[in-house]
Amino acid sequence: MRRLWLLFAQAVTVVLALYFVYSAMRPDWQGLPGVPGLGAAPSTPAGAARSALLGGHAPPSPGSYRAAAAQAMPAVVNVLTTKAPRRKHPLTRDPFFKKFFGDRDRDGDEDDQSSLGSGVIVSPQGYILTNNHVVDAADEIQVVLADGRKAAARVVGTDPETDLAVIKVDLDKLPVIVLGHAEQAKVGDVVLAIGNPFGVGQTVTMGIISALGRNNLHINNFENFIQTDAAINFGNSGGALIDTSGNLLGINSAIYSQTGGSVGIGFAIPVSTAKTVMESIISSGHVVRGWIGVESQEITPELAESFGLKVQSGAIIAGVVRNGPADKGGMKPGDILLQVEGKAVNDTNDMLNLIAQLPPGEKATMRVLRKSRETDLAITVGKRPISR
Figure (cartoon, rainbow, N blue to C red):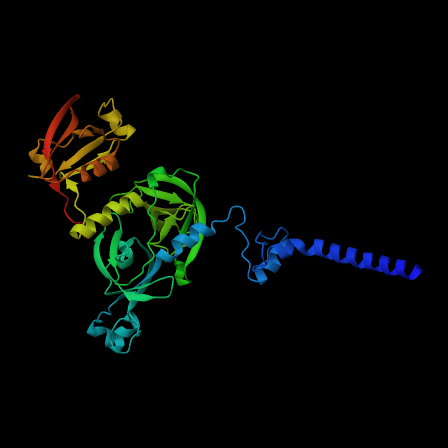
């Protein structure tokens, strides 16, 4: 009887020990793949680490933007450009002049000039948005996809006035980015910048939208930048600025820097502008804009006081092109442009954008202030000359 009781006590002890071991290990077993009925994620850090080592996938941590990056990164490409070498002047081969010009090439040619940038695939047909300054004057353009594929690209068209360009590659099964809604973006929204900074490879940086509608930066003729503190460096030009859903908000274009590196002030062209420019380039090879042939000047408080102006909004017409649309329509130097087709002109940037949106060949009503009297002028809009 005593022996049976000892066996029973030992059996109970073993069972209890096994039960405690099972209870301690059970959370980790739940995360192991392939265990029937146990598909929950690991509930402890140690369990998560073991699960990852064994092939499990831990859920995104709070604040992670891995899904947005994973959606957009395949559609962002590296753009490599090459300019053909130029012949040196014959005097550069003279021993006396070499000390001034240097002896960089024995064959008398300059080296190939290579540069890099980024681009964004926006169409299954192979259309890629990038910056004009990335492909400007390039003799050869090569695009490298995130999946390792390479292809030669050709320029479909450029728009120097917004610093945008459209290039095209002939490849199948291209990843395409989803166009977002830049007009719905607000200051403080989190954004990601994707590109190839300094040629190190595809890189994602994070920041927020610092400002909207930045203009008068004298970077482009038409400016409506999204400002961000997401790190943008040399090589990021033409890359994507995306929201936290992975949708395209803008094309990274420029930085403000005294050193050439990112100081937290970057500028992206809104996707709304990029889409309009792209569609125009694809359909006609260039962007068609309205033009009336005037030179404008901002109304400053000092000018308003000296001219006795009661308004400080609008644009002063400083000059009129002879026989241009404005001249033929009766506009004169000294007029203050107040409205274009009923839309208020706040400054010269407003004036430029409103006129550019007008279809060439059609008449537009423009209200001017002349000698303290408002006058409506009917002006036949011309076609803005293509900028070089």
